[in-house]
Length: 105
Image 1 (tube, rainbow, N blue to C red):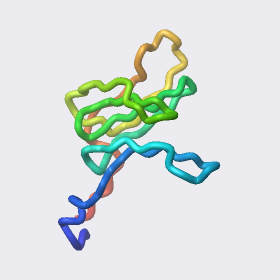
Image 2: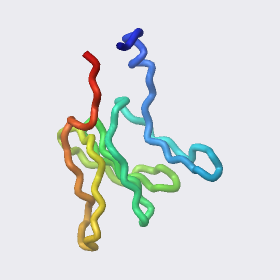
Image 3: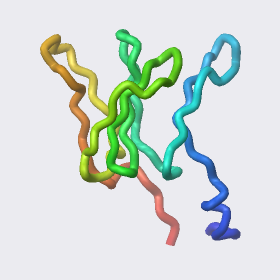
Image 4: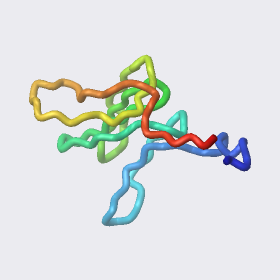
């Protein structure tokens, strides 16, 4: 049980790119809420993530620059799916607010 209900307001959420060799953060993309969707990185230099505020965002993997955003009209908690279809213009993403969440009663 959360001891301090105000603690949630203090949380800062972000998508973070991490360099495991240098052991440091490469970039951070701020998030509006503190529970966001899965992430897919591609060999083509893209990072794709859905979030709880109805967006699917595409970032440049080396800088974190946002290249594209789409209003999914609902939260996107599931991670994007990879496909081997070369004609697939955008990765399939399953919209919806339900994901693997544990709720304490």
